[in-house]
Image (cartoon, rainbow, N blue to C red; front, side):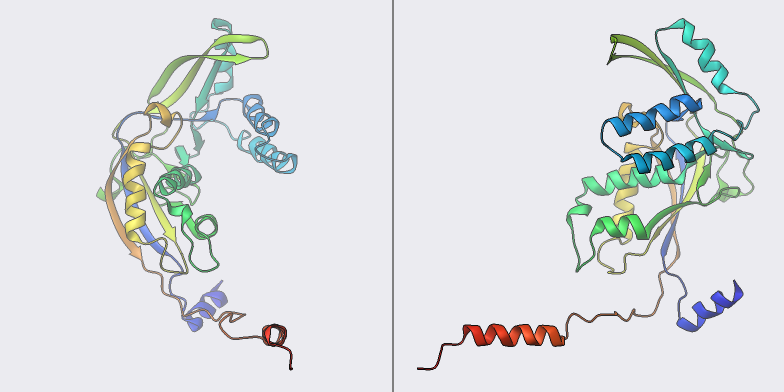
Length: 295
């Protein structure tokens, strides 16, 4: 570890990312989107396979990851799968969606925030741009990240806090604030039927903190203005479940650049600006073919 840190220092690598710290609070109810029992979660993966969205090899990996997620008990010690089973007798179909959780409380995955930003970048035409050989999709997927930044957060887990983490020690939210019920209709193999969906929610005024990391290499695609525009749209587009119905809106309260990308210029393995032997030979052959034959 120390040896690699010394190597970075010798190479002049100070920070490979521009990092912006974002502090936000929920502007309205933010809903949990984790199916409350394993069978329901696996059924969602199977549905994606049937629709052709993912191949079976990827689906099997998702099933393994899903099983691992459901091995952990809920943070309040209850088994919410029992709630779903009991409620099923009240309606033709009833589903409960909850928040992911760890030993410190309920969370939202940082990947969900990145997914929301991806949509916001997309509507701004970000993915239609291209600089050199690098496409925006490559940069967004491999060099743009969202990481939890709150006092008890991990890179993947963004907790909800009862107060602003910037004001000092903040207590995590141990459980949801309530459950919202929504009704709708679906058409399945047995014809149309009613469905009642229950979602855990957190109230407006709950706090969360995360970092946005970007290493665009080109310096021309993801700058601070682009990040600010994405976050501005994210406030209304929201995060969490059922965003299309207006849930999960945020209010960005604080935004700060905390690290500036500072690395030495990268030496390319292949310099396309200089003609290679193969290019020279090809150009010579083309010139010979284009030149008129001697009289």
